[in-house]
Amino acid sequence: MNKLFILTKILLKNSDNPFESGFNNKKKLGMIILLILCFLPLAFMFGGSTIASYDILAKLNLQGMLLTSTITFSCVAMIVFGFFYIMSIFYFSKDIDTLIPLPLKPYEILGAKLVIVMLFQYFVELITLLPTLIGFGYKVGNIIFAIYSIIIFLILPIIPIIICGLISIIIMAFTDIVKDKDRFKFLSGMFGIAFAVLINIFIRKINGPNSFITSIKDNSNTINDATNAFPTAKLAAFSLLNSNSVNGLLNILLFLIISIAALIIFVVAAQGLYFKGAIGMSESTSKGKKLSDKELNKSSVQSSKLKSYTIKELKLLLRTPAYLQNCVIGGVILPPIMLLIILFSNGELSKGFNFPMNHIFLVIASTVLIATTSFNLICPTAISREGDGIFILHYLPVSYKTQILAKVILGIIISIIADILMLIIGAIIFKISILMLVMLIVISILGIIFYSFLGIFIDLSFPKLDWDNEVKAVKQNFNGFLLIVFLIIIGVITIIPFIFLKLSLISTFIILIVVYSILSLLAYKLTMTKGIESLK
Image 1 (spheres, helix red, strand yellow):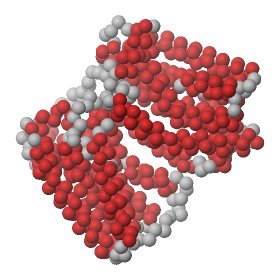
Image 2 (image 1 turned 180 degrees about the vertical axis):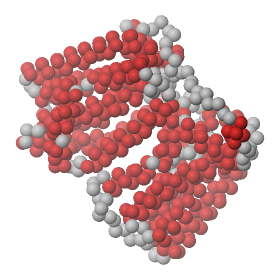
Image 3 (image 1 turned 60 degrees about the vertical axis):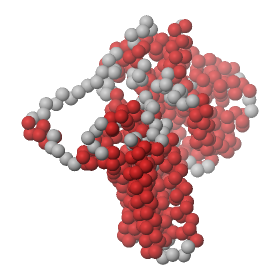
Image 4 (image 1 turned 180 degrees about the horizontal axis):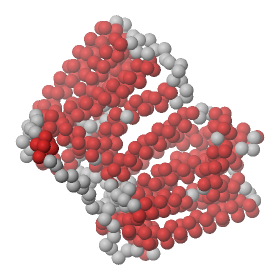
C-alpha cells in the first residue's frame, strides 16, 4: 500500500498529466482561475435553473426526477469523457515504459492512475452535478442532505470509471483495435468535439424553468432507462430525497457498498489483464508497402522548394493528432459549426434574418470572418512547433524566406477553406447577394493574409521551443492568445469609424481593400526582414 501512495504522488508531479503542465505556480493559478471563469456561467445556469424549477417541480412531484436525471447525466458525461481519458492515462502515457519494468503490481500502477482519473472526474462533476446539488440543497435546507451530497460527490465517479476501465482493459488485452496511439488520439478528439457540440445544442434548447420542466416530462422514459443503467445514480438520488429518514441512510449505505464492491472487482480483473494490454504500447508499426519502380520514380520527381516545403508542413499537421485537432479541425470545422449552433439551435433556421446589406454589414461581416478564420493557430505556432529541432532549419538547403513563406501559405489555405465554409452558411442564413459575397471574399482573404504574416512574426519573435509534447506547443502557447488580442483590437478599430461615417457600399469596400492591402504588405516586409533576423 505504501508503494501505491508513493507512486500516486510521483504521477501527480509528472509533467505528462494534466494537473502538472510544466507551468510555474503563478501560471498554474492563472490557468485555474481562467478555467473557473469560463465555466462559471454554465454552473450558474445549472444552479439557477434548479432553484427556479424546484417549487414548480415540487407541485408536480417531479423534484426527484430532476435530481435523478442530473446525477444520471453526470454519470453519462463522466463515461463519455472518462473512456478516452482512461485509455490515455492507462495505456498511452509516457510513463508506461518506465513503470512496467519496476517491481510494481498491476493494482498499484492502476490504483495510482485511478487517483488521477478521479481528479479529472471531479472536475466534470463540478460542472455537471455540483451546481444542481447546491441549488437543491439551498431549497431543502438540510444538513444531512449536505453530508450525503459530499459523500455522493466523492464516490459517484467510481462506477463510471470502472465501467470505462473494464471496457478499456478488455479491449487492450484481447484486440488490436486501438493500438495505434495517434489514430486513437485523433478519434477521441473528434468524438470530444462532437459531444461538446451536442451538449451545446442541448443546453441552448433549454431556456428557463418551463422549458426545462417540459424537457424532463417529454424525456421521462429515456431518463428512467438511463437511470436503470446506473443503479448507484438512483440510490444516490433516493438517499438525498429521503435524507431525513432511515430510508435515506439505507440508500447511501447501499450506494457505498455497491461502489466499493465494484472497485474490488475491477482491481481483481485488472490484476490479471492490465500488463497484457500495456506491454508493447510504445512500439511503432509500419505498413511495409513495397514500391514499384514506377511508383518510386513518381514519388521522387523534383518539385519547387516552396511547394515541397508547404506539402511537408501540411503532412506534419495532418499526421500529428494535436496539430490536426487544434489547428486544422479547430480552424476549419469549428467556426461554421459554432455559427450554426448560435443561429439555429432554437429552431430559427426557416425564419431567416433581416440585416441591411449596407456598408456597416460589410465591415462587421468581414471583420468577423477574418477573426474567426484566423483562430487556427497555424501561423502563430509555426516556429514553436519545431521545438528542439529548430536547429534543423539552419541546415536545410532551403532559404529562410522560402521556409517562412511555406508555413504562411499553409495557414492562409486553411483559413480560406474555413472562410468559404462560413460564407456558404452565411449566404444561406443572411440571404447575401452575389455582389456582397464577392466583396466579403476579397476583403477576408486580404485580412487572412495580414493576420497570417502577423501571426508568424509574433512566433518568430517569441517562439515556445521548450516543450515535451505537441499539445503544449499549440495549446500552451501564449503567441496564439497574443494574435487574438491583435484581432480584437484591430477589429474594433476597424468597425467603429465606419459606424459613424455615412459611406456608400463601394467606398467602404475600396477603403477596406486599401487598408488590409497596406497592412498585409507591412506585415510581409516585417516578417521578411526582422522575422528572418530572429530566425537566424
